Structure formats: structure tokens, C-alpha cells
Length: 208
Image (tube, rainbow, N blue to C red; front, side):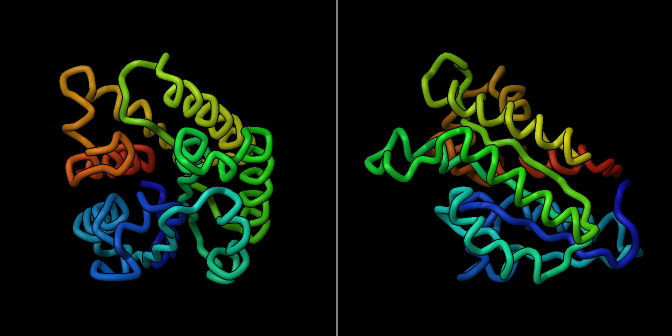
């Protein structure tokens, strides 16, 4: 397992990370981040890890960039877990296509943000964007895979732990339907959040 005693692990992203952490499920939300926290605390109580959730529903990489100094760098985490990019793609397929973030901009922004936090000494955990869709030829899924590939390259450059969330959903979709995991192929139900949490935990070397 990668973590050391009393380290601070900060999670940042969009609604998948937010999950009500600023409202009824404060301060951790009721999604994958909360599941990860609970399991790490239960299995590694001696580490006394600290957790912070800074997910904001609706965020794209542009929105993340605008709040990076306040919500990330000022927190000085030991580890930063980032999942961003779903809205960058999804907006192109919604009623607000002007809010979509082109792949070159997304890639440049994410690279710059991760570099800045690494320069503070933090380690990185980078999660790919995903769509809960088994057919890679569906246009939005195909575009999401392009953004995911960019994340994989950046993670390698930054010596980050990579959590391949699309692959995690692809495995369960061999036996199930997308609606088993999310009503809209994006926002997971509790079993869907468990898929994300397990992928994250496996990537950091979690053991029962």
C-alpha cells in the first residue's frame, strides 16, 4: 500500500467526486471517495490518514483551473487524486456545446495543473474519464476514449498512479447493462461508485 502515516489525500473532480459533499452528504459526499475513505480507515486505522473532498458538480478542466490555487495548492496535500474530463466531452453532446473543452486544451490544462501540484511535492493518482457504454464506436464513448488516452500519457509523464475507470466499467459490462450502473451512463448509482472505488483501491495496492 502506497500511503504513509498521517498523510493527507485530496480528491478533486466533478459531480462524480462531489456527490453532495457540500450539502446533505458533507464533507465527503456519498460516492466513490467516501467508499475509498471508509475502507482505508477500516483496514489501515494505524495510518491515521486524512481525507479532503474538493469535487464540484459540473466542473470541466477550465473550471478546475480557475479554482486550483484555492482548492488544491493551498491545501498542500501529500496525495492528489484527480478525475476530470467527463464534462469536457459531454458538453459537446448536450445543449451547451460551446462549453465543451477541445482535446488539445484539455490536455494542456491538465498537464499544467498536475505539474504545479507535483512541484509542491505531492504524489498523484489520476483517474481516466469514462462513459458507461460497452460499444466503443458510440460517438461520445469514442471521444471519451481519446481523452482517456491523453490522461494515460500525462499520468506516465507525471509518474502518477493511473486508475483506468473505463476499463473497470468495461469489465462489469461484459455481464450487465449500462443502466445497472448509472441512469444516464455517467452518474453512477452506489454499485457504480463501488466499481470506481475498487479500481482506485486496487491501483494503490489496497489489500484486505
